[in-house]
Length: 345
Image 1: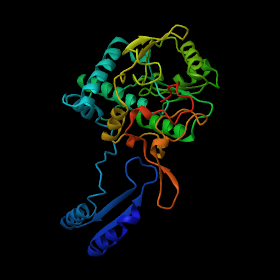
Image 2: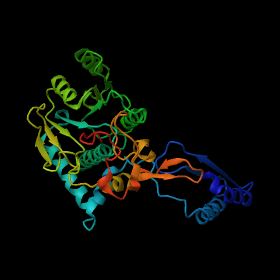
Image 3: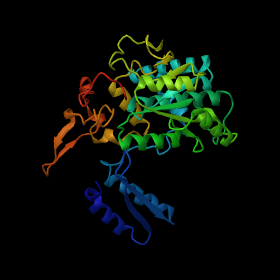
Image 4: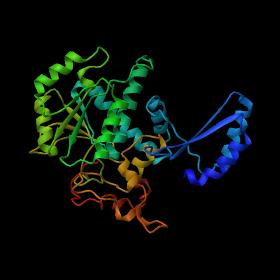
């Protein structure tokens, strides 16, 4: 994209040479833009003129982008749920109702957020953050320096996870949880690790603001997790009706017989594939970079491929894939998966 706007940008820089400094910076790891243009000047009026010229020149390329989507998440998300003429607004309202019910029923130490870096649980995490932020503000806690106290986050890692997924999980933890939060890993003795973590926490970051990582199958990892954390009563999950085996699910339901028993909380149950993407992108929420490479459902490296529905041939004859959010036929969401009966995102 930078090459496409280079000529106009050069002409603009020449026009304001010596008065306005104009620079373009490629963004290689952003889900929303590829080039950032910066203006700098000591003359405010001239700076405004240069900015207006740029708006006219690049009107087809400029996007609306919020670099800090979590700061006022409650305002934006609750504003959306009031848009009753919108299907997404109605579904967000029901999701928040489900989340608030769980938060009122259980303490944060009795809840866990299941997160694997997928699009659904990314939307779910932001909803929970917004709901807790909303509660905090309603309780007259308006300090911008205090992050909402989120429940523990459980990441069940596949033995062959994508590096992109791992990186996104780490970045998400940095954004939504305090940087001093400890990532507890199963390769250490849990009791020793928990004690170390508790002793190392400051007063502003308790054990409940941590991330726990287990490897293996979902069933065995959940069994070990509940054995290590018997206080957990409910698990927030990003399940939707269109997921395998979820068509009879309800918003709150106990685990199936034969599985570790825990209340499954499914705020996104009625959401569609397009709902998820409209939500993520309308709030400029970061998501795993694999989705921009044509993956529409992400599991492990062994069973996940770009969606063939998004395949196209570039002018140079190279095979490429459109981003996941451009998929029109939602029924094709999982055709990039070898084993389509397992929900991981």
